Length: 478
Image 1: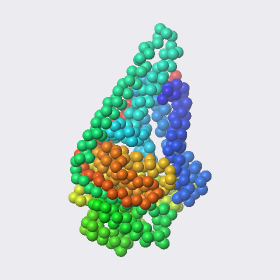
Image 2 (image 1 turned 135 degrees about the vertical axis):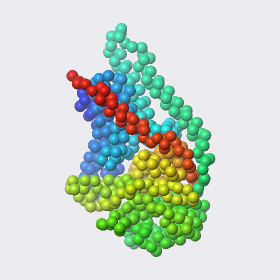
Image 3 (image 1 turned 90 degrees about the vertical axis):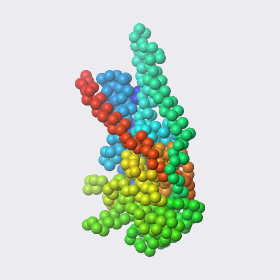
Image 4 (image 1 turned 90 degrees about the horizontal axis):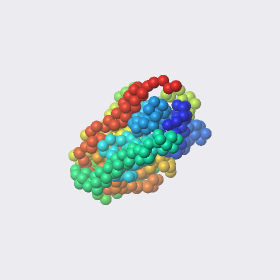
């Protein structure tokens, strides 16, 4: 932010672009391995595609720098007052433009610092992004004002304290939020409300290469059945299997599905499982990445079809234009998107589920959780390998619990499976790439947080403020 207070618009853009390239290279390096391993393309081509993705994402920090510099040309260092709003506006754009990719937003940096993270229950992860950006802007203000005073004649130098006033104000706000958050966490009111439920999370740890191997299908399925019995034997009142966990289409393989239904009937326990679904009523038939709720009586209580598909993983945008990645296109599944969130019944309550990547979309989860009492998410993170990606994914899922004031339970094929309370405490957590059965307590809750009620109002307001500032300060820069 200090750098964009001087120089040309081009300089500001390039500084922002470089910042974005460094940030996204450090956080998304693992995509190269995913494409090379599972997209059946060479490492060189995978690196090129990932470089293009990183370059695209870096345009958002570049746009931030460009806007702040443009405003600075008109009002000088006071442009830093707008910086947090501009930053949030660009993150909002990243969530919506070209299907969106809101991975590792700035606000997620606070997810493990629970007193500050509670701010998400008011304004969501975008509110936290704005808070972090505000601290950076206040530090930049102090640095810029210090530089200006050092170059000014003594008679025109301001008070040494004046340069630090914004920093003191922002730090006071941070301390106030942290104090309030610490009290909120320590009181833990939501952990004593609602009805408790003991959940069993099944982590099969099935290698991606073996998942659809006919020779392994029966043994994989038996392992899931055995782990389910294990969880029920340890007191689980509801069981979750990961995304696409059955080595068959649940509705197409009646004998296989009946084995799951039989366990549900015998134990009188609902089972939520991930499995692909075929809709043969449409022409051509449509395929969905789905989640099935099996009731305690063995019947299907509801089916959720994944709404937000993974680009280049579950469908290919602009397929006709991507002739240069033909191999990757051929190896990508061709799923259709579902229409909306579905409330799934469990033990007299309602829950929603997010499948895999959907959990990083705060508003999508919020809308689904509006009338549900528990957030579940099922995923297959085997694609990520032994990288930082599974940990990034779990951290982002944890933020949804804080935002919505709900317990979050997560079943992942290769980890991380776990339980997160409404304040962000991780109550249970598995290691990656090992089979595991997690049994722990969650609660069905109905109280709604402020964020759950108002949604991304702050983020939308930031976009409006950014556009209004550009229009009001518009003038020719000589």
